[in-house]
Length: 372
Image (cartoon, rainbow, N blue to C red; front, side, top):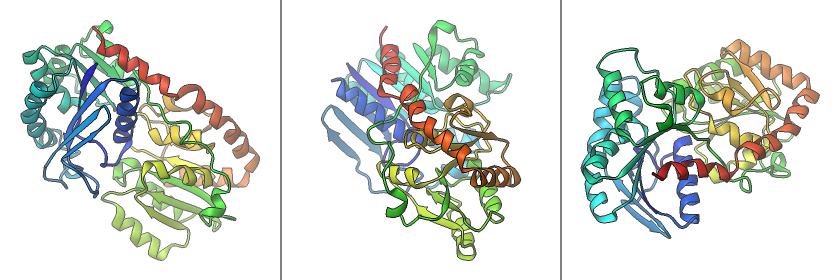
């Protein structure tokens, strides 16, 4: 089958969605499907990129676009839409003409709108996938527009039951909506022996944050909390984003903050393995929390906000849910620090939990959606 993937973000841009898309195209091409990815150049990460890239079974075209505006427009959905829509809209008919896919898979609302418009004209099956919970308004023009997008698609999928309920609340028939789940490479994400020694973290209790350095990820609450942690507890931060300056400023005056910068996804397993805890302190409705999957596969328990779809990604057999504030973060981290047996019990459960839920077989649900 020939499949067009429409997305605003793709590697080498950095994020959970981008990593999922890498996994998706890898799984599809391994099953002999031919994939074309139409996307933008990296919009939020500084990285080397190519306009056109071709590998076995995969072609990627990255539209040259003005970077640096995405984070500024996150809380302005109309402007964000106008920023991301034109390039995908203009290039999609060219790809449809020359690549001739049987299916368009669109990721998110912007790509979804582009996909259903051109999909109708070119008579292609369109599958829309959402990676987050949008909180559509109860009424108004925006809700009507979103309903038109989903009702025009042949099938829609949400990453969580919350996302599926949100799509169905628009009046989309249940038979046109499904759920999918991320997966990870369980051979890549597994415990790395002697990782603490290799990273020079021996004798330190490490709490690791991995993700975009934005307010919505709870970075500010985490930094504030770390100021009052016991002296042998360290906060390690891996990622890039607008809050880098604040992190570097705190690092210059704090002995327990380790800033690792941007780390490529395939290089993360030693860091997960060397950490005693991974923390996901999101203050917004997290779509799923891919970091959770990767951490558990490496045997490291997770402290996570009880928001969005995070409770669907893990349970308290492998971590702890919290209401995010500097105090609750501090209390939870220090409780695990003082009770290593409790932490060890969660760690022993983590790998099997990930193996049972997050293997590559999860791609089959998406492939089923491609079929009429």
